[in-house]
Length: 210
Image (cartoon, rainbow, N blue to C red; front, side, top):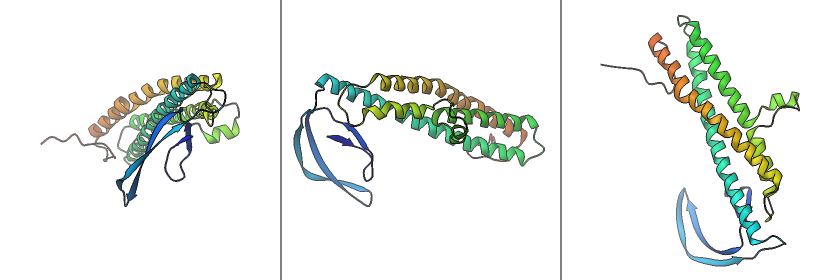
């Protein structure tokens, strides 16, 4: 039996560990979820030569993969939001010729740094299409770790474990870079914009005192 995720059209999830399970139903009408009465209990039996320990090891590995995927998704969303923010800052600087050129240079630096993090997270299709030897992204390592786990109850393969560790280590290295850009560098640039009288930009509150 496979755990299902994503609702209609969702991808198949991991094979569940053998044991007893209880299923309940609910209906959703115009966004309102209402539990339906009754439940059904059933038992999932193991198939194939894998042991219970093998299945538990796989279940634990798949849980680690799911947590890593959530962290990668959250990091990607933060990068995207920061890129939008910095792009707006650069356009505001470019539209105000009286501002010091160093602000323009700093905005370009931040855009480049964010782009490099995004490439590390998710790759660059253009670069990959012209250079087959380009390094794999964290997302690609994640996919390589997840692929051998689908439709099997055996222990995670050595390759899957190695790919997971690479993705985990690389994400741990990128997050501090992103945190510094978001929490320190972008805020510092915005303060300089305030001091120079730059036009408003999204997410930048004015330093207003009565």
